[in-house]
Image 1: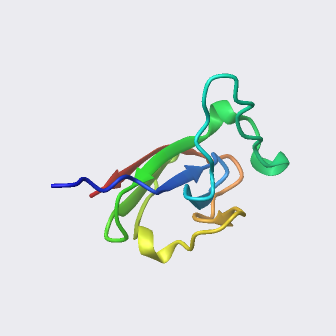
Image 2: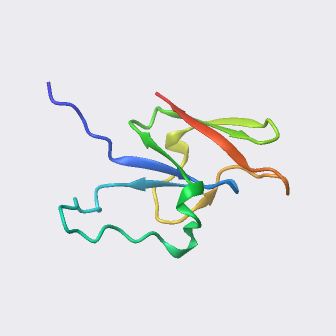
Length: 102
């Protein structure tokens, strides 16, 4: 039986913005490859949360610093190359955790 590889990732920023990105157009790198350049508006890579999305039925759960939790299906988030607002946050609030439920 052939296993299906993951072709989609979810990138979350602490300010409530997120992006679902398709991995098909990204070429495989070998030794000596130059890697990929992140978009300039992505911010610091150390603050990003990245998850694999295995199917459209997966659910995404996001937790904030002030205890707000939201849950939505991965199919509700369109695949694209720009960030969209996933969660409206107060001034002093930020995303501290997230999980993808299969």
